[in-house]
Image (spheres, rainbow, N blue to C red):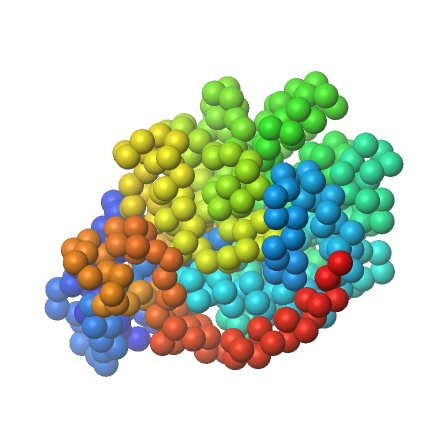
Length: 441
Ligand SMILES: [Zn+2]
């Protein structure tokens, strides 16, 4: 496959862009990329479109598409307490419908790799992770799934109801099972599994430590929520006598195989520690604004050489699973916090591509370079919203959100002419609407 007549933003180390570019794809990989006269062969003329690497989402809860617009004025803890009992109704059928909806939306917004943080395992419900893996395989995107967990229930001073917490041994055994059954090591992986206890206020230190031990035994990344709200900071100080980042350090977590969602409330020392230890961050600006949590210090994190990617977060705190919107949101909140030079359009795009790949410890995606997977997003730039823009990369970010025109994952077409190739959008929405009714209060 030879894509021609495009502005190609490669997101390689040098930030190379080819304004009259082409991309040659063979066997699911980028074989070559360049500008000017393309190599010989049959061409697919993109008519002046912008081509970027497929976007990488580093934090989501796909099941939450079932419970949008709940607890509309609530802060994080109130929101969670409202929703936990509703989420306790989750089963594999609902998870499948939710995942198809969330992944469909993500693909249409340019996302080729989805990380899903799943931590709700109602007693007796099997096949939840398998359901989302099936949805991802059917729609054609890469999925980094997680066996999340909670073991600190209300009666022990935690936030979730006791009915949603599990015994540590059960969590670890099920994680081992899923890794053995689903995890693909090595470049080009379509499905991976990471270890992801939910948060310091829903998982005990014992579970956090055991999870880290298990992950490191298998060479898997580790993930959790961290430093999302001022209330969480107060909770950590009261319960553990230290700030959230210090708490993770004490548990032996902070390292290059870990990334944490949010990291909004950080001290200067926290930021330095994340940088020094190589710990990554999933920046989720829309969710943080929706719950009134604040704005993460992304400029400071980048300056401290922290790996930062973008996360949508679940659809109960960010109703729109549109990662192209998150590029714009990241730029806007960084500027709201730090002024007009706090983040450039290209830095925002880098967060959503290379940054996300680095956070997931993937060097096979995130850039358009020979040898990497051909995960490509093709954006039409001839619409009304881009008229008068002479910088297509900047226009994608400033004028977003935008539906992708074509999307390729490993060279295979997932979106064509702005529609899913492997599923019917209306059918997904209709099925999801029916199942979501079960989750009404
Ligand atoms: Zn989250």
